[in-house]
Image 1 (cartoon, rainbow, N blue to C red):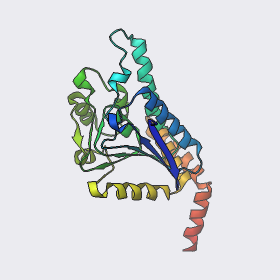
Image 2 (cartoon, helix red, strand yellow):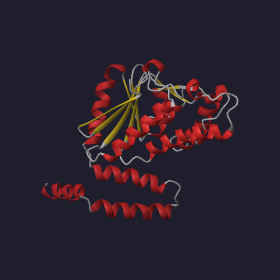
Image 3 (cartoon, rainbow, N blue to C red):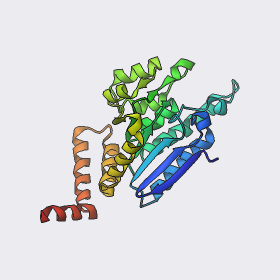
Image 4 (cartoon, one colour):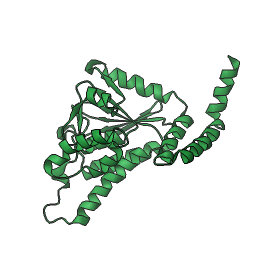
Length: 251
């Protein structure tokens, strides 16, 4: 059984984490397969939105520590190699040219929470939980922290990382970590409607919006405004914009 299932249809690339018997815990094979699926979606001009889901009851329970553990004899360089593979995956999600949506059911913990946090948008069921529990076993979710501090306030981030406690979907929504929460019975239909609605938007505009956010991250106000002016001008030259202006003038 492949660790990741990929399917593209109607402008949506669905990437399903496919180790339900392990609560979709991340091992080296799954990380590589997920990275490959993201690349495949990026290269497909027909794809407008990427949807990441988990098979079974949970989105992703985090790293498969048994599979990734190299024992007490592993050096700092060994651990750095493993960490960089995960960092590369998070960066691939963050820098993907299409909007990436994480649809979270059950639990998204550790590395699984990292995948969701790296996504542009997070949808959850009311019964879902998200958390960064690494501190409970003595290490730091340091790569995810770089993403989390861009999503919530510094004090919220510190509390999540320092306590390691998971929070329910409605609390995640309240602190701005999650975009939408659906009742369990409405989750499938809600996610489907959400991503299809997104896929109906201008593909060029969505790509430029994501590019703008990445470019302006950490910029001064003056530089961010200049980057915005350049993206604004570029967007007006796209076919989508020309068609949109034409439709507007006909009204």
